[in-house]
Image (tube, rainbow, N blue to C red; front, top):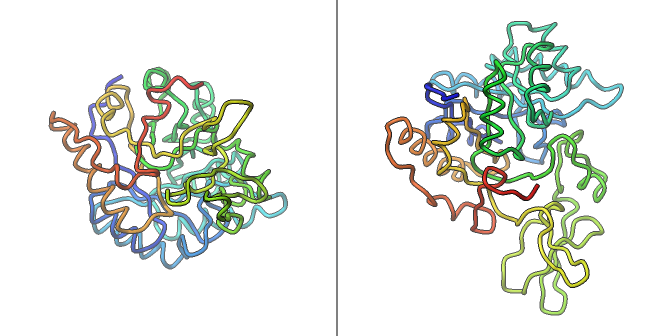
Length: 331
């Protein structure tokens, strides 16, 4: 299936300043979350109050952009009211859609706010047509954010079978686990990415020098060792460097960023409706630069011009990029 429409550029915002930067740089949509554990980027100093969200919606709409609110963690038993209130507040603020993962929240949004557009979060890990059809038929989901474990051919196969928009990640941090099913960070820190909204929380990160090496640790676990004068990657378990016998290396994925800019033509051909940039924890200058460059890339694709490549390497983790599962066969 080929998508004849211009793909939507969906951009992150962790602060009101980042939201304005994304809109000004050409974002079609901006996704953000509230200042609590209802979203999967629950870090100090990030996210929006209800008042800030309403102001952000007004700014985005004035600039011709839409606001998507990520309420994409899973409610704790006996505390679902916080998540229900987040959905209600998103509606009151005038959000254009909510991004949900939990089926109870999807049911709540469908019943209480039937006109509210519902997107399925990547945290739901819906990676095949049957799973996606379930969410579409039962909860009226209009778009699914696909996990970052699918090849371009698999994405095309899904789009041939489902009557639903698909959204894929094209830049930023690369999670190689089946999203919504990650227990590594929870095991190491006691904080769940899927319930508390925190992957490798900074409160559990430690760096220290040992015998000429800079050692990075997450909780009680050593994640990486590098020569003292080399940059140490942020200690995320799935990107850690481990030793087993005579082997030493990155078991799951190198500590690098996803950059699928050169794959935009193939993804459009595969029927993708929206391109998503990761990075709600990033600065507004990062947001401005990444959104500006992907705006140019998408516009170049629609004009039949070459896609600029490698221009964002300086903003990538480890100054290196990968096409991830789009091209790899690590599964």
